[in-house]
Length: 96
Image (cartoon, rainbow, N blue to C red; front, side, top):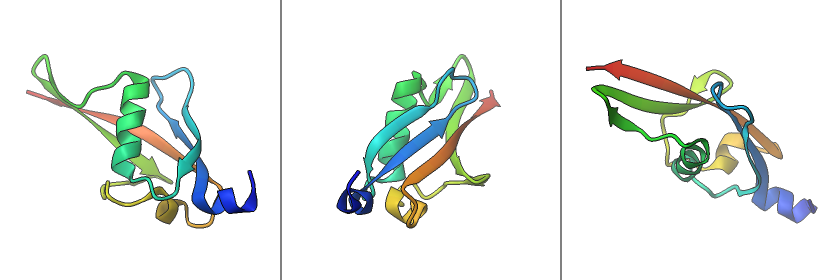
């Protein structure tokens, strides 16, 4: 990756405990929002948010144990000057 690419792109890795391998995007745009990333991650893992069999499933991205609630934040701001961004996806299930 050239120096210019490093300023525009970063490597994103998302770990999900129920998956055999993490989600990886090698050239994610630093201007991409967390919302766009979350949609791609859910699709890659075959997950859907919402109601199923009377339970509600939601998924949250975490960065260093901090839940990422502002999905309009872009990846570059979150990664700061790092070339790689490592996140974790967590599932919450609400009964009834």
